[in-house]
Length: 178
Image (cartoon, rainbow, N blue to C red):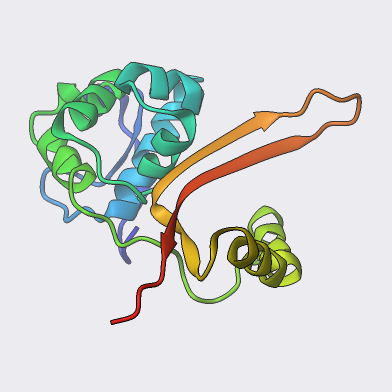
């Protein structure tokens, strides 16, 4: 959200979701779209899995798209806008769809996040990153796991202790001499 914008509730004009002051005249950022969609998701008590089913994508990809890290097709963007009721505002829906269908600026701030969950992923890479690299090189040769040709899955573990199981299924891309 940019400086000077505020979130507020206007049930008579925009329905039940939170909006930026007069979205038809405001410049929206991709982060604004993320915040609008997260507010709408929470208001409707939907899960990311529910939304993924609506657009025909995986739960992880859909979540990543809503968080601003994936480019949606026009159809996917329209379906998501309709699910949240943004189709009721003729000026807002085209703006949202335009931002959702643009190639994103992937990644996040280069500073290490202080959010405990994100920090744990950073910590895992700090502790095991060189191990992952050594094992990839030993098993596949000199190269990297693709972040472009990559499938990600996250599921709840089935043991008695709560567990998180994350699968990264990426193509191997060898370095090539030139």
